Image (cartoon, rainbow, N blue to C red; front, side, top):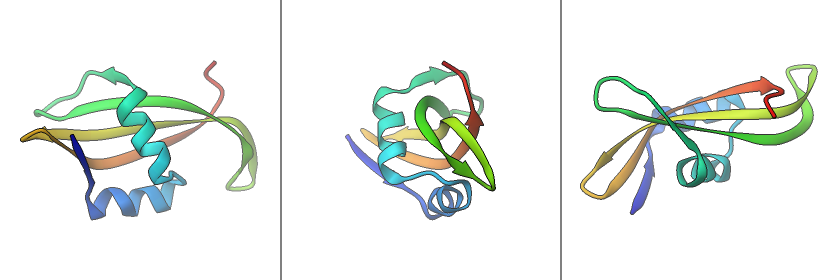
Length: 86
């Protein structure tokens, strides 16, 4: 399966502090969540132990909204959350 990250998702990645490697890991190893409108969602928690917007956080969670089309995955947008989950 080929993964395409559309420009909108790349813009959100830059704004929200996500890397392409994290998006790919989320799509391959993430937990699937419920989504609406034919879209799919996966999320994955990463060790972060760094500062985001002036505040330290131990973990970062990525949530990737995507679609499957003709054996391809199209990442539509990416959300990041900073905190502690595990």
